[in-house]
Length: 276
Ligand code: PAF
Image 1 (cartoon, rainbow, N blue to C red):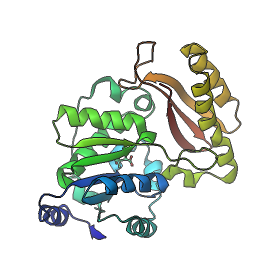
Image 2: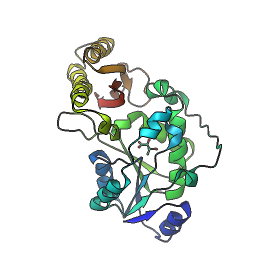
Image 3: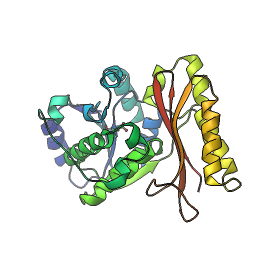
Image 4: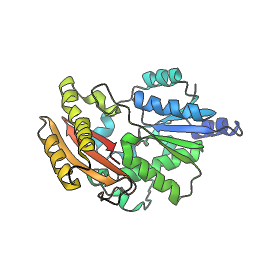
């Protein structure tokens, strides 16, 4: 695997490979099987797979979260090499951002719903860094996980608004044996907290099983109550949303997704499940 830390080096290398399809998997590192499934999918459908590891400061809304974000770079390199990734881009912050750089992209309501309400400014940071990474890598296809469902919609909106020539590919959530969605943040959970966190996927599964038998509002209320009743879990939201707009779902929504976020101990987790 080739490793580049500067824009210039990676650009030079990628532009020397004419006519190759590039599958791009942007990450913040601390790689788990969810990330590796994206690499695998990108590998199956492209000539070359590029992964980036960059803990993006502009998308963090809390300084200690940024500071404590896991950064096991040697282990990540070993995992990417074993997975057959061709190129890793692992730049320092100064390679991506100038001092006091400002960014604002109007992506409409999507920015402020659900995650956007609890993490104001988060999606501006995400669009900013993904825009820069796409501009550097110029991939054929961009692979992102369903686990960050809203992020996928936000980036898709940016790609549409700015006419970026890339195909968006959403890959399914990878789960641990008990059902916990894989996340880099799971390393912060104690064994007990991991047990408590299972209530997220269990409640989503319960909502999926009862979808169509209970009205949407009742499903949301009962799901919130189930989360609230689990010791050690502080739910932020549980909503059934239209899969395209993330506005509240109604009978006319062709895709419906249940999304939830909760704090388990000090760790904030998100999860979702497609119901229709
Ligand atoms: O999902 C992530 O890991 C990040 O939000 C991303 C897309 C790599 C941007 O920093």
